[in-house]
Image (cartoon, rainbow, N blue to C red; front, top):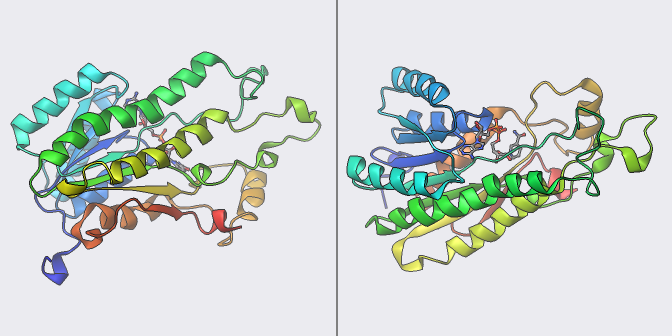
Length: 277
Ligand SMILES: NC(=O)c1ccc[n+]([C@@H]2O[C@H](COP(=O)([O-])OP(=O)(O)OC[C@H]3O[C@@H](n4cnc5c(N)ncnc54)[C@H](O)[C@@H]3O)[C@@H](O)[C@H]2O)c1
């Protein structure tokens, strides 16, 4: 066991984070940097990655790096994994965070979000990013973690909607027939529940290599939603409010660090109690 005051340290640890320039991805990267780890940021836009890498390195005096990688493209992941090994010699952690966040509103009145209309292309795209991408990252970066003599930690970012069904009444608009209401798309539930299956699979896959795998199921983050929506959603959360974007950082740090050295296969709801009701 590490010195007690050091158990949350990520010093010397190389942590790959997907979707790293999104709302929560940035927070994940920040806590890794703040506790001495080296965040490896993967996202689609090289420009956004570069800007964020510079911010992190200035603020936390770390050597964060970032790459424009489409996690649905196995060739890109494979090449990047090879590059990371030649650069750092090892990988210690993976945060499978990237996902499409399909919007409830259809935008053009075609009710695309409803199951009866949901386009097969959107199904494939959402599954491809949220699930296939996580599988591919586990396959390549996870394998390299299994080759690390110390093992490491894989964290899948699921959702409270991986545990419970979306309450479609939250999205209902006055004056619209029930069969015309926009809904939370089916892919969100499928991807987030799928990540829980992936978590259990990975938690037992490299048992002799000290590779731990756990999932966080975050509740919704307050991010400029309309007042009437907030009132409705807050009434379904025992704590009476949505999350702040920084309220998952402590849990992520715990799961990536040796403070959680015996945590494996856990599905951790951090949702203000939403999934308890
Ligand atoms: N924000 C919330 O309220 C909330 C709640 C529960 C769970 N989550 C989950 O947390 C995670 C992060 O959510 P967020 O709010 O930061 O979303 P976000 O949309 O802000 O960020 C997602 C990031 O993933 C990237 N991405 C998309 N496709 C990609 C691909 N093919 N390859 C690489 N990167 C890709 C996007 O460019 C984006 O930067 C998601 O898995 C989301 O489902 C979010």
